Image 1 (cartoon, helix red, strand yellow):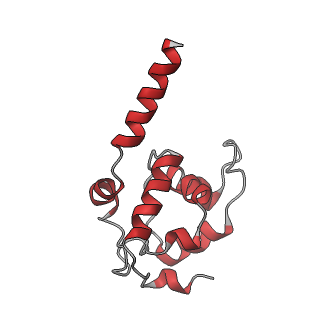
Image 2 (image 1 turned 90 degrees about the vertical axis):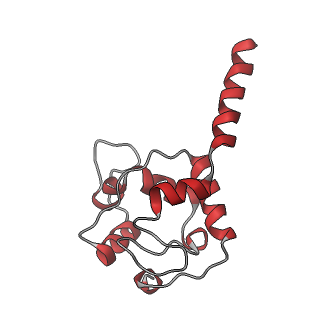
Length: 127
């Protein structure tokens, strides 16, 4: 029981300690905007409306696997057609892998949505 309590405390601390806005400013802002148009990568405004959290989680953790497929990595066996289209808009730059949990991705998507911005740039042409 003590181990379970400790595990829950560690999990809760890690979840509570994650600040999506600070993380965005520290990690994402060099390549992405929220409502400011394209940089190296797409404008992320409205991302929660364009993609499900599960897709974003897979993409940020292994973009190359999503774009090119990886037969040796479960869940990435085949290229994802949407990831390929996004890459085609912004190549040759490929997003660097980020080690994000699903909870962190969801918190980031919520933080982006809370900015109440509309996307600009090439990402708006993606169908």
